[in-house]
Structures are given as C-alpha cells and as structure tokens.
Amino acid sequence: MIFASKAFFVFLPAVLVLYHLLRGTGHKYRVLLGASWLFYAWLSPQYLWVILLCTAIDYAAALKIEATPDDPGRRRWLLLSIAANLGLLFAFKYTAFAADNAIELVRLFGLPAPDRTWDILLPLGISFHTFQGISYTVDVYRRQIAAVRSFRDYALFVAFFPQLAAGPIVRAVEFLPQMTTPPGVSAKQVADGLHLFLGGLFKKLFLADTLDQLFVSPVFADPAAYDPTAHRWACVAWAAQIYCDFSGYSDMAMGCAKWFGFELPANFDRPYLATSITDFWRRWHLSLSTWLRDYVYFPLGGSRGGPVRTYANLMAVFVMCGLWHGATWAWLVYGLYNGVLMSLHRAWDVWLRSGRAGGVSPLMNHIRETWAWKLVAWAGTFWLVTAGLILIRMPSWDAGGVLFQSLLGVDLLSGWSAAVPVWVPLFLAGIAAGHLLGGRWPVPAAVRAAAGVGMVVLLVVLGPGVGKTFIYLAF
Image (cartoon, rainbow, N blue to C red; front, side):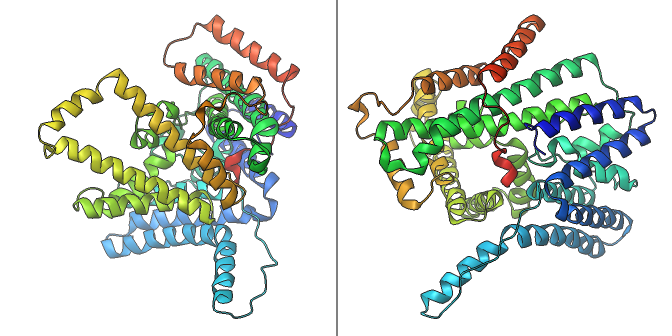
C-alpha cells in the first residue's frame, strides 16, 4: 500500500474515522499502532517480524541504559541496540551486494565462482525505522530524553504509518513529547494537512510520474537514441522528478500526521535554490542530513581535530550517506562525489575567512555578497547537483558517461531538439516557480482552496492515474 494507491484511499479514511470516534488516548494509540503495523504488513507481510524485533530490542535496551548506573554497562546496552539495527539493515540491504563483489573478486584471481541465484526483498522502510531506533537509544544514553515506559507508545513512534515507509526520519525528542497529552486536531491542522496532502499528491502523480514516464525514463534508458540537448533536458527533468517524488511523499506524510494531531519535521527547504553544495545539504532531506551530522559527524569529532580529520569525517559521513541510499557502486561513488565537493567547499570557505588570502579575502567576501555572484554560485551548484544525480539513475557507466558529457554543454548553441516535448520546459518552469515561492509568503485561504481544486481537476483530467511507487520506498 502506497500513498498514491486506491487501497490507501480506503485505508486512510477508515483509520481516521475510527481514531477520532474513540475516546481516550490509550484506545486511539492502540488503533493507530494496529493500523501502522497493517500498513507495514500490506507491503512486507513476511517481514513484519523485522520491525517488531527492532522495536522490542530498542525498547528494552533504552530501559536498561536508563536503569544501569555505570557507564560501561550503559554503553554495552547502547551497542546492543546499534548492532541489532545495523546488523539487520546490513543483512537485508548489503548481503547481495557483498556476495556479488566477493564473486567478482574470486573470478579476478582466475577461480570459478557461480553467479548469485538468490535475492533478498528489502523490508519496507528499513533504512528509516532503524535510524529512528538508533537515535532513540543514543538520545537516552546521552540523557536527552527519558526511556519510554509504555511499549505501545514506543512502538507507535517507530511504526507511525504516515512516515514509516520513506520518512522523514523522526527523532524521539520530536515525536514522543507530542504523545504525552491527548492528541487534538485543530481546524488549522485539518486545512494545512489537506493543502500538504493534495500538494504532495500533485507533485507525485502529475509532475514526477509524468516526467518519468514520458521523458526521463526513455532518455536515460537509451541515451544513444537522443541528442545532447535532449540529454541535458532529461538530466534537469530527472532532478525535478526526484525532488517532486520525494518531497511529495514528505508533504503527504506531514499532511496525514496533522489529521491525527501530530506534527512531523519538514524534510526540504527549497534545495535547488542553494548557492553551494554545503547549502544544498542543509536544504535537501533535512532529517537524514541532520541525523548524519548529530549521530555520525559530531561523534567522529566533527571539525575539532584539525583540517585533515575534518575532511576525513566529511568523507566518512557522505560515504555512509551514499551507502544508506543504496547498496551499489554508483551510490558509493555518489557519496564520495558529494564528500569531495563538501571538503573542497569547506577548504575554500575556511581559506577566505582565515585571512591567509591576503588582500584578496576582503574583496572576495564583498563579491560573494553581490547578486551577480549568488547567481553564478546558484548555477554552478545546480549543475554539480544535477551531474551527481546522473550517477543514481544511469543504467550503466557508459550511459552515464554519455549523459555527463552532454551536461558539460560543449555544444550549447546546437539549438532546440525535436526529441524534447514542448510540455517539458513548461513543467519545469512551473516546478521552478513553485520552488521559488516555496510557501515563504502567506497565501489567502481562498487562493489555497482554488489551488487545491485546480490540482484535483488536473489529476483527474490529465493525470496518469494511480502512480508508480515512490522512489524512496526502495531505501
């Protein structure tokens, strides 16, 4: 069951009605927990035990961490929780990747090795709920939050179905305090939830799926059949597609949560307006970026150990970021690519601020504040981000090389390509306009209502119907 499916549009109203008819927080939470486990089992029935086991281990480990007086004992329980979560994540997500590479290594030495004939189906949202479990036990270990006494409440935090499949990654300090008081739903939450849900559905079904089916997939599947101009438009369209797909899911998750009385953190802050790669990662997939910062980068030492240690920590974080997304060499290279860019940008920024640039530094700092520089910085950042996204969509390294070469734009004066449908730039212009506005200015209720009606009409009249699965469900 996914958000953009017929089954979900039966499931959600039924759960909402039952949830709000019941009296008493306990009854509401039991229904919501049962619905969340049903949502999980709908797509991964054979793996329901995975989320139940992780939940039980982390729940018990947190209680033990809090009850144990000595630090070594507390640390042992924390390591048990982390090992259990990462062990299950590795077993399901990386075993096949490790086996394939072991086979290739054996063959490299001239020894016979049979092809892998087995596969492992990835449990729903395992990358998200394991990270939530780790953050919970770490926060209890750090004494930033008390261990939850109610197994029901903790299980609901981990399995809450609006964000279970593809985030955002919600931390215990953000969610559990909301459960201490009986959940109430205001009229504003209902209206805001509807606006977010419809907007996310529109992003997914009308924008992301249309771009994918009619333009992005055909070009990426066979780049040799298209010219460089079409390649460039397809790369930009792919950047727009993955943003609309993932942010659409996040918007729908936040909207659903509001209807149950809960607030989830925003996962995007207009990332394609970033003027540096560092700025981009402060805007894209915020729940993962901040999770990696607080639970990996800072524990490794952050920037406290000198330049070499800082860059090593950045590389470690982004290698982990790449592998978290997928167990492939392309995702690993994507992580390395962003780690190198982050390190280079940090070195450049530190050099300018240190004064070692002599008289150039004050001048450069002044130039960096001008609109002309910000426009150039934005264009360069968007190009670098788009180039990196080729890595995670290309069907092969050769195809990726062709697309990357076209993105370099050595023949920008080649003119328009007949292979690019005229609606593609119109779609991208609309996405850019929405990105630019991005909810920064208050919108009158009448305008929001008209926009909602317009989105529904477009979905019904021109939309492709029930959409493809969300991209991030694969993670």
